[in-house]
Length: 163
Ligand code: ADP
Image (cartoon, rainbow, N blue to C red; front, side, top):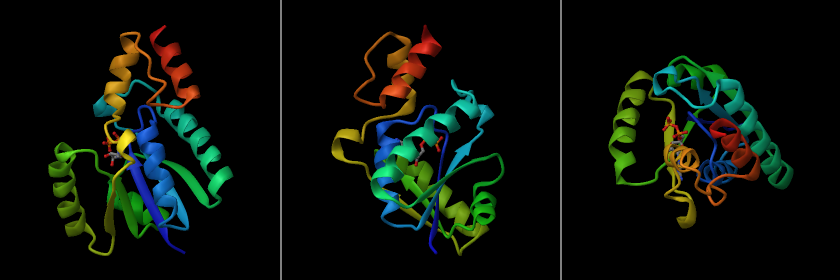
């Protein structure tokens, strides 16, 4: 049984994340979505809200594709989280060259901590590559339309946050 861990902040989950999750399902038997508590990043949504939103997206995905997705909040080291859930793969999305340097360092450090866990990168569909939670929040805060970037329940959640 191949278990993959897809970690992130998911503040909030976007169509970019959904695209990566769908692609990841073709690579693993069980996908664990690691929702990082990430207090330092000062998330807009609470951990419970982020988990609930991503669980709703995953239910819709598995209803279509089958397979198993588990949403797992974590606060410890990524590599320890991977070990805790039995993952042999860490899955990450790459958006642009800007993501590369940070991810490059992360792979190096994580490999030094545990060389048995491999990191795999995926790119979203061209229409979804530019989507970033940070910009979605900025657009929603300024009253813009985010319906091209997130699913309807997330549009509603963003409206509720920003009034
Ligand atoms: P983090 O705080 O770990 O960057 P994010 O929730 O921003 O958490 O992203 C989680 C993962 O999803 C990261 O690997 C990120 O590169 C990837 N990702 C986010 N948006 C996209 C997108 N539009 N296309 C491809 N990958 C994406």
